[in-house]
Length: 238
Image (cartoon, rainbow, N blue to C red; front, side, top):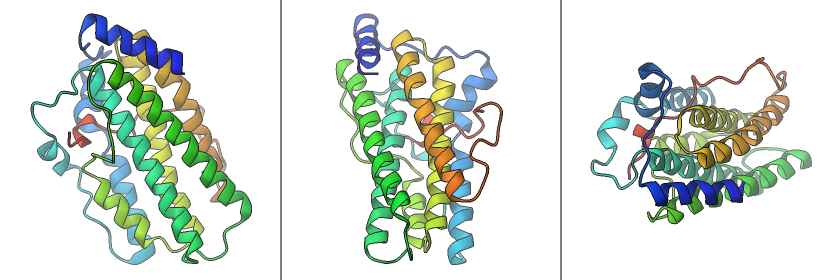
């Protein structure tokens, strides 16, 4: 994965910022303008079920909040989105650990605790790989979670009161990441970018499978990984 990231950065450095090679206008538009709403709305629904109120996660605010004149364009915008999603997942798992240690989630099985720490570490590795692409292409690394749905995500996590609540929220984030990378693998122009996305997407899907099992669901419910839950680059606020 590190080799693929380096290759991707080198391609971008040599050729300038590439553009998204969408298969069709509709699919390209999905990633650049329409995706990401599903996870935000699902997070709101999970929070509503556990607390009686839902955070304001309307995806319509995403485009308005996206910064104009961003230095992250073309393939680099997708890479920046990937880092932000990874950082969001790291923060979510850290919040879950904090809640568990504070006794706010009830009894937490040891296996669940191990999964959380392992998944968090892997998301940190993914963020480093994607950030290496950005810095290798001469643009700043992404720090924090510059996503317009982060406040809704944080609120939903704060309202979680059981292991199941946290698992549902984490499952939405994992599915979103996996499907975003699947879409990226078929639409970015760089072979290195494709390889990086393709090497990470299966790991996110495996995280989702474990979370499904924790929730008592069949861990692999679909024959094929979709893209309807992929995040939109319009969620970026940088």
